[in-house]
Length: 373
Image (tube, rainbow, N blue to C red; front, top):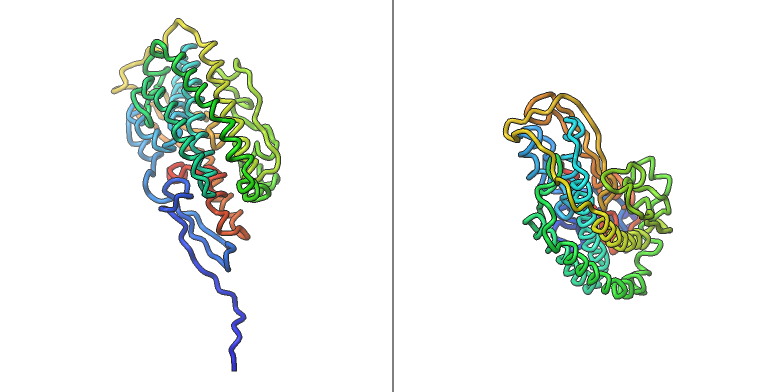
């Protein structure tokens, strides 16, 4: 007599953190029936963490080396937000030239980050050429960061009152050479990613985010713009030199993995155009940093503020409270990675094929330390 087994079997699988399709040091604990995910849980690891409390226990100037680690591929957004929050409370007026240089640095950071992410999106599907090309192209931007700030990854360049130093002679010409090199490769990137039959089949209609989740969950960035919704902090809440720049919000339709990749492809070209505009319009004269008191004894007046900026992942914001002492009383970092990498990802997992998990995760563009802040 044969015994018939009717109950379903659920298998637990740890996906990461060593998996090349994982974004950063996080891991996914998924439960499967066959090759279909029934549920999952995000584990973000303990590599970089507790930034908010670390900042609250240090003087203002000592916080700069900390915030860079909140998102390693794009540290400059955190530098700007820390500086902008303190400047708003302290009433510091940033010189005009410093605003333009800060805008330049933020767009350089966006360009470098998007190049890496778009290459990684193709790499999760076994297409190894785009990651190699785009990491190499990103290195050209890191060359300019090294020339400008002294560091390729962590910069600590945007400081209270402005920036640490002026642009070096010939910087604009060298940047233009790099941008032209990147642009020469973009048609090839289109051919091997967006016109690739395998990439299209595995991304179109896969990982669709319903539009009604946008306001319900607080979604931002390319995830929202891939629905055709024109939300961009640079346009909705203009800051620095963005009001004086000419650009449209990059949009796509479909709200799937393909649409999110297409938005990032458009934003690569957008950042290239914005960098050229910034270098053409940047003031040649004037100070690049306001005069500040002694940083070792500086006490900021009591107050509170919220500042925001558009990172490549979406809106980032800093809520800060000061009490008149030489350090921050309370600070909260509002990063899109927490919503996208925990709330949204876990909600999307049921019914997802295990083969699509890494592509889905990369399309949401999560920085794990931004969750463990």
